[in-house]
Length: 203
Image (cartoon, rainbow, N blue to C red; front, side):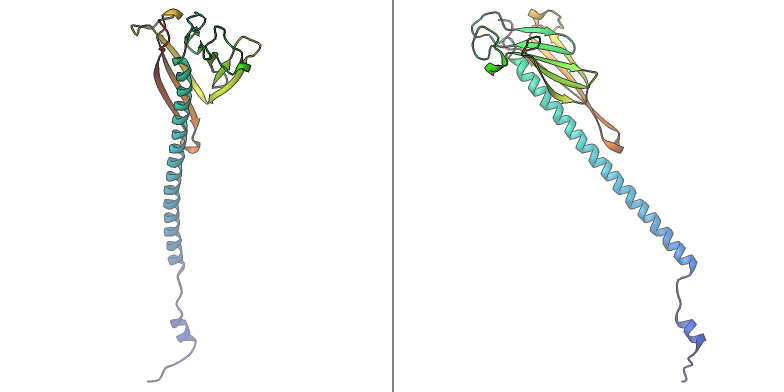
């Protein structure tokens, strides 16, 4: 058998991809790439949303725990002086006093007995503030949590009826909403509510 070598043989032995094949391959690669990117973006968005949601819920729980702890002690007056109670009770603001160091007077901050505490919702700045010794020369303001869109205090008497009379308050219901940006996932908004029994009032 005689094998012929030449230009015609070389052309037959060295076939390449046609333009159509290359275009089809590129189209398939583009579709696969888009699918991968879409899936990745979706997972990333969902992960970010979950992370922000967890952060918002943690902030809510932490802030409400702090407020509840102080409200629970409102009116703590072991010497029965009558100087300690809830002083202010509005929709967005509450001021409580408690005798932490068993002294008939409300002590100043330098005594490290924070016996007059105010919680105030600053709607303009979307934050909840803790104000120590509000209305005195020793007043100091501390941020508790930001990105707050709503804080509402509701005051209940011994029959769990809403009351606006300070001496009738036995329970404080608190509702707080925090909203944070979750990037492309939009915004995350969560509301948490709790009730705090003022165990030192009504005696």
